[in-house]
Image 1 (cartoon, rainbow, N blue to C red):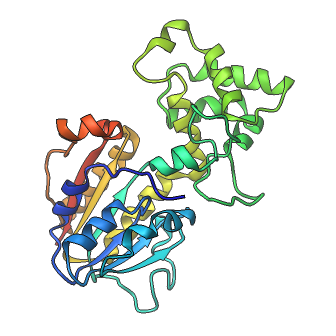
Image 2: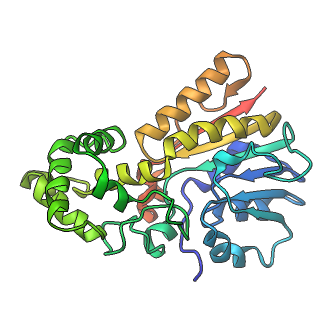
Length: 301
């Protein structure tokens, strides 16, 4: 299976890095490989370290690099582990990297092809883990909805999904799991549908969107990983090196904005774009995912 992912804000992200030939780049969220491929096409003799905790990402996207003169290596880890001993390579790249990219959220491949329950449109096992082959010790959305307390469920649905009907949804989850284990995405969608008022089902976004987002973030500790990943990535940047970060919801963007402003205030970096960069009308016509994308770029001093 090949990657079907369409990269958001592709040119803006790469142009914002201000790269040159022989650049060293960390693609911290490789996904479908769109950013890495464009960098390989545009610059000569670049070195790219591609990171993704979904090990199938490289298999799906590697054909895009077959005819390119590009030194690219793939690391099957979460980007929050960048600071680990010998994570990137034996000779540390700390203070040597020209650019780093964080493209947060889900790729189209994970939504369409993973079979792990990210999408409420397909009936799949309720896993929601970024890992392709989760072990029995790995937390899943199924674990959360079947074992966490009503209060804990309501707290994450609101805290990570900003869902105003979190109490009603959490209560319905607890009542339903007494009768039958909640195992699939459609099981959960049916529960949410019963919990929310009819008017809510006619809104601009699907009534299950915020709950699914909240569970996915909780399962993968996405916000905690982002905070660590930004810090670790910044250490690898050399003076003049830049970090491009694309976020897709307010919780992520808040963390990125705070991190960037703190680095600027401390005198370690400067903001390249004071105003957040969003997709233009042409991109919005061809890629609906771009509507919520926000790009921020930081340069290390």
